[in-house]
Amino acid sequence: MIIVGLTGSIGMGKSTTAAMFADAGAAVFDADQAVAELYGPGGAAVAPIADAFPGCASAADGVDRSKLSASLQANPEGFEVLEHIVHPLVAQSRARFFQQAEKDGRQIVVLDIPLLFETGQADQVDAVVVVSAPAEVQRERVLTRPGMTAAKFEAILARQIPDAEKRQKADFIIETDKGLTAAREQVDIVIKALLEPSS
Image 1 (tube, rainbow, N blue to C red):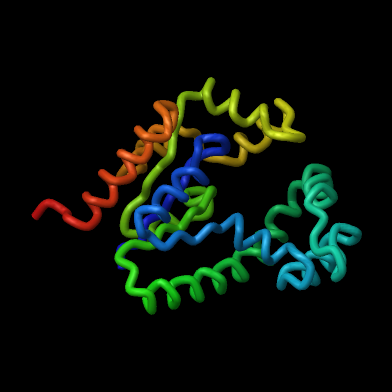
Image 2: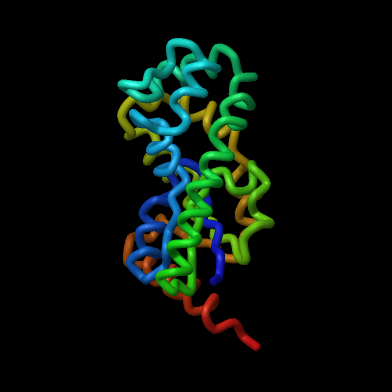
């Protein structure tokens, strides 16, 4: 199996691009979705987060993301604590995903990981695909999201490697500001290049 790391800063169109890879037959592991399941009622992250961040999680309701976010903004050292809880659990989910993809005979698996470079996981994949768009397009997309503010957007960007740097580290770049058809064509080109590398 060829393992692809799919990444891109907030608002670049990564989720849409991941769906295009899935439509083209790749198995896609969505790290955000895995976290959402871990945070939900009965999720494996709920009890340890409730212990580490009092008042931010309960067995009945799962993790309250807005309370957790407020706690992390007030105490940024908490990010490290949270990562120590969440990353090993996500790794277990990913291991199960790989087993299933292998059983299904998939040729390409895509790991949709927003912080691929930031968490040092880029060296664990065979190829890196960066989803990108001009800064003004990114800003416009993000600020239309419910509950998003310019300050929140800047805080998220501050924790992410700049887009220009990601592009330099990429094996492939998918530009998402030219419309869905153009993006889908780029995805097809990437898949063809992965499956038929030039000898």
